[in-house]
Length: 291
Image (cartoon, rainbow, N blue to C red; front, side, top):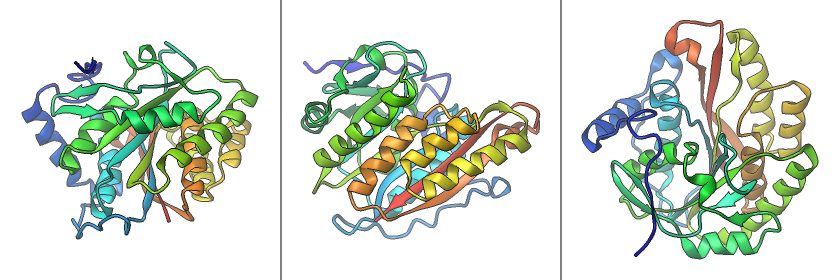
């Protein structure tokens, strides 16, 4: 019997019942023009291999705050075409388990049902990396991968498999080695597959709105240039508190090896725009990386 990873933040970061969760996601899909988040046009889906989106960057806070940005990213993916597998890379906020940890089998449960881990792809990534370890403990309490799953379930037919990866506790030099190593391992495992890589990250944490926006603009520019080293250097030199900088750099590295040539900002706003309190905000951005 396949092991089941039970949800850690259902009922807190997002609704705990299937009915309420479907309703809240549909509301998020409608967008918020006042936040600059468009309503989706629901264009005809492309079929593999005609899909253009190689990767997404999406936030992972509570849906009340970051849900509009995340929903906009997943609607872009829905319009582009549903992948067979999604490699989702997020930060490990709790620090449990291995510094670079992948789930390699079993099911991940949400109120909308179960999502299967693509064991073949997951094990190929682990075997192709010097640093990534198979480790379920790192995922047990972590939300950065989990909060992406209801969106993925809602846009598709439930058949998209996942490879969950979380990253924590790396030094500056370790992070550079990991970006190169894991980016290549992911790209090699996904070559020729109908796949997407998703970086799960929030942007600047707990600074005044003007400061957060200025810093996040620098980081977003580095992502748009598809330059993982510049992203890490920009984050470090400007003290930008992006929790998923390394996962995002890994995603860029993998996407470039998979043929990505451009990145486009989908949405950006802060918790201050949601609450009307600009003193201590968190930034939320979503981007798509394309062939």
